[in-house]
Length: 280
Image (cartoon, rainbow, N blue to C red; front, top):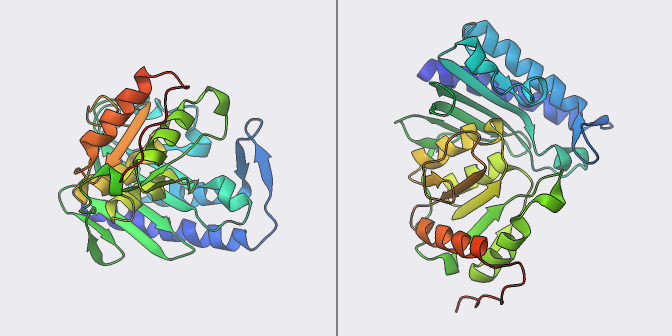
């Protein structure tokens, strides 16, 4: 287990150096859709990670955002027992605008698709130098300090995180959830990196997080961090979160049932529902 995590840490640090170097240069942007962009930094970071993982674990499958974004079934097709999920630059839009909130996310899963267990995960913020890491059954750490989720017990006194997609935004229902959760909590932050949002839940900066339509490479490492730090990760129905699920809800465990209750109310109510009461 430790060798998996050590290699992932090395790969994340190498990729992070690439991102910081690229940030100092004029950003070269290509578009995967009307607003869904990819930079040269994404490609360089991803290639460095893949080269290192393949050198150490040639029999493992790799599903990466750029080279494998349309082939998430590649791992299943290969018959590999272990699959690496890589996001070489989570927070690409932030990066492209020079907003220094982005990261490298690397997670290792074991088992068949739809029934995978996370073994190791790393989320690295190269601008701040914060490296979050976790191995199954061994806890979660920020740099060399063990981390835990927050002790906040009520949604009304919590700080939450969420995200919105860069494409098909009009079809995404999250604005209704954002509105409701904002009025029922201390506030909701939308920083632009799901992996860092999950890491923030793990270390107690956020008390909860939710988002729709995330890909496995967005959540693989972060969900392990939350669980190893004592948190809970499910879908809106309360089922344990599986990679690729449409909904991801993470919390410090204490407020999880409240989050699910509010989500259920939003699902049942029309967008023009009456304004919920703010916490007192």
